[in-house]
Length: 246
Image 1 (tube, one colour):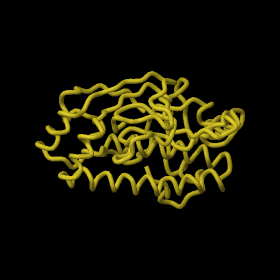
Image 2 (cartoon, rainbow, N blue to C red):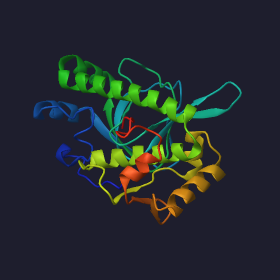
Image 3 (spheres, helix red, strand yellow):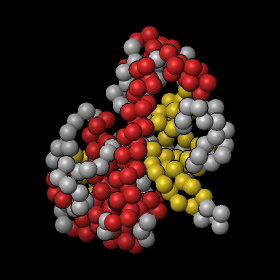
Image 4 (cartoon, rainbow, N blue to C red):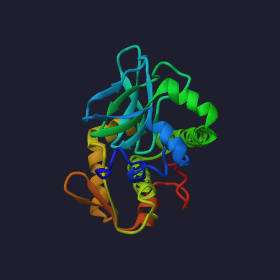
């Protein structure tokens, strides 16, 4: 995702304002939220919270990407999800974190103190309704991701992840998935392999194949150009409309 520069004191400059949990809030509601919010920044690789830790805040991802992971009894870990810009971290009514959350790239969170946020939800339908919508979208996306991990080929998995990231970037910029769209890949190839259940060699091989065939272009290590989004979509194995929530 692209780097973000905005005025923390002015919600009007927030790059996720039209997708975040506060997207439908009126001016007086934003002012009330402003009294309980603060910002936290993390460097790539820095933990945000560990599974079982008490969480005294909930938050929206303003910029960057975080991973959600779960550890098994034998010490193995599995990445079970990603938090992209505008996604919500934490659950009102829950004291403890269900997953390990680690910054994959440099990350900025807009945090709200949990107890005041929970109290505000009861009197602010705009927040509770938006949070419900986001939760349902997250459920749909999780079901779609089960298909990606369980049935798709390595090439389709890589193409699907790139399409998801491209759609989110377009949504944040209030644009359609136009030809020639450009975005910064927020994951290393190692992280992509972990998330997709592939080896590093397979990820590198499939990305090279997509590049060689002109489906994607790479500028430097992380900048991805999609000359023809429909062509990338064809490589995902999904229906024409994509079938993936973002």
